[in-house]
Length: 297
Ligand code: SF4
Image (tube, rainbow, N blue to C red; front, side, top):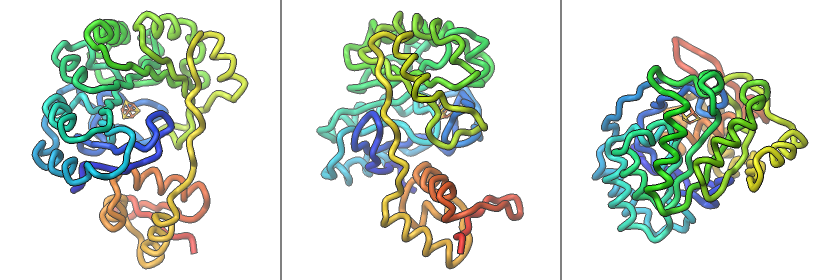
């Protein structure tokens, strides 16, 4: 199994080589907008999901490839990995590019997690809610997680971390846009280097709506100094598209089979399948409890 994916073109991090320390999809949230679908394993317990020496070996093997950031993200919440700190520290010795962590911020309320995440060069935390009501509505957390503690964790992290913090705020119509002013105040209080506003652009876990371009422009007045994350590139590399059509024309495949045949991470397989479904090139069907993808012949 591969633990690295990409490099992918990230809207925020340029050419990003991803590192996935989790089993698909392990998270302590079940965000309505999640592009990975519903959370399969919702947990707040940190655990060991992958062998660190294998991840580091793979980083070593790919160190020569061109990428702008080595990014700890992938199929869930990276801070749930108990190996995060150790792998981050070793990875920084291997690669020259800055090392980034994308996190949903919830576990930054724990000092031990803050110490591990602070090994990174850039941290990209999320903050989609300031009230518990909106937190429950948009992020659907595991029990025992509180918006107030998440905001305090971000404030504490700022005091302890001297690297760059790029805070992402995902705005979803009718779910958290009503409390944009409250979120803006909370975001400001955590003193990030950048506040980046986003809305639903990829296929979300639930049928939620994005804010329009005009609505996002208005959000810039509520979040002074913030920036909008540019539109995502809805394209599939030609090589992947052609190989996927060839594969699915021969027989239907599960996501795991697609990932194995195309030698891509499951997260990328999901992303590409979603785009190609949207373009009418492939379709999905359940069979004997499993999800299969078919070519549209
Ligand atoms: S968007 Fe991130 S934090 Fe939210 S459910 Fe998906 S993986 Fe978890």
